[in-house]
Structures are given as C-alpha cells and as structure tokens.
Image 1 (tube, one colour):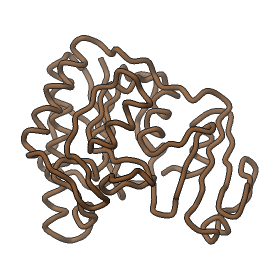
Image 2 (tube, rainbow, N blue to C red; image 1 turned 135 degrees about the horizontal axis):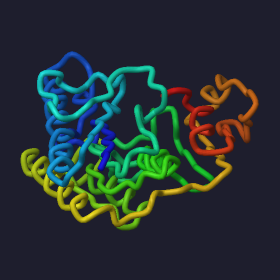
Image 3 (tube, helix red, strand yellow; image 1 turned 90 degrees about the horizontal axis):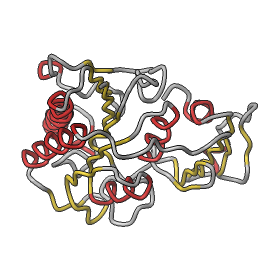
Image 4 (cartoon, one colour; image 1 turned 180 degrees about the horizontal axis):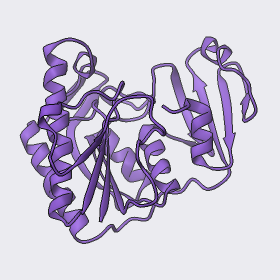
Amino acid sequence: MRVYISSDMEGIAGVHLWEQTGGDNDAYREARALLTRSINAAAEGALEAGATYVLADDGHSGATNLVLGDLHPQVEYARGKPKPFWLAGLDESFDASLFIGCHAMAGTRAAVLSHTMSEEIQNLRVNGRLMGEIGLWAAACGHFGVPCVLVSGCDKACAEAESLVPGIQAVVSKRSLSQHCAVLRKPELVIDEIRERTRATLAKGPAVQPYSVGTPVEVQIEFTSTRHADATAIIPGRERLDGRTIAYRGKDFVEAFRLCFGLA
C-alpha cells in the first residue's frame, strides 16, 4: 500500500494567527515543529496499517516548513518550489491520500485563517461548484484515481471535506470562531488522534471513492479586485468573463489547474 500525505499549516493544532504561518519568529518555529509532528503521526499510522511507502508533501507557502532533523526515517518528503505539480510526486501508483492541517475556503463564516490559494481570490469554482483548497486537493487526487481517506483541520475545514467526499474521516484540530480566533485542542491529543485514525482507516481499507469533477474542466476564479484580473494574460484556455472573473478551461483537471496556477 502506497500512501500520499499532503499538508498545510493553517489547520494544524495550535495555529490560529498568520504570524504562526511564516517569518523569522518563535511562533512560526513552534508551528513548524507541530506541523512536522502531525505529518509524522499520519505517516506512522499509515506504516502501522501496512503501508510499504509513504510520501509526504510540504504544501504550505514556500514548501520549506518541515523541521529537517525531525523527519521520519521511513518516510520520503517533497520540499521546495517550483514543483512539477501542486501535489509533488502524486501519481496513479498511490492507494490512498491524507490531507493534514487544512483550512476552510475563502468566505467561510467564522473559519480561522480561511482563504483559497491567496488573499487575491474571492471565489473559485470548478465546473460550477464553489471550492477551496480542499476541493482542489480532492480533485487532483481524483484525477489520478487516488481516494482521499482522511483530513485534519478546523471544524469548518473538516465539514467542507465531508461535504465533498462522503465517508472521509476527519480529525478536528480546533473549533473556529472567527478569522483569528479558535477554541484550541491540545496539540498532543490531536497528533495522537491523527495517528490512530489513520491507522484504523487504512487498516480496514479505503471506504471512499476517488473524487471526480468530470471532464472537460472549467475553473473560474473571481478575484478580489479588477486589478488582479487585469494582470492575467488572456491566452488560449483563458477567458475573461467580467471585471474580476477569469475562466480557465482544460481537457482535464490537471490541465485546467496549470492554466490557473502554473506549477504552483
């Protein structure tokens, strides 16, 4: 069994402020350690369930967040940018995927650190369905036929994942109250739950189907300002629909995504 782990930082236990997600400060250094421990817990659960290979992708910001000295010896990690694809190393050979530390999409009410890819994006739709990064992750995995079996993040993010992927297991790291306020669970408890829920879920075999958005694919991005749309070159596969919205069209999800975000 081959398992893919994608990660983000905003949904990690204990994280609720932007200063924790980057910069030269103690808050970010502490969050890096929590992120690394959370990913390792998912990997340990997968290995205990019989995984023969685990690849973990450092998916936050510049993709250099993991603490190198604390990486699990039986796991491989994808770090740095540019990546060949948003989820580095993902392909058809994987049997299951996990997403650790996710946040809710832009515009979600009372969701801590919610956004979609960047603060320049107000709404994103894939074949007409409003989505955030969780939906993009699920669609990317689905393109390769890989089921998404477990997600961790705030309660709003977990609810978003459950609405997209029936049967996905969710580990709630905090209860969001606003953009910068949440009721936090103790990180050690969340990390232990990630390990155990991963082990139990993979041991009995994935019970969910890969998420598919169908083909062809149109991604519509509504920017927060006409200025951002003005700066988007109109090339084959892209169309400006109104002052703030660009449509990106491809034969499948990967092609449409790359028109939107390049290598990401």
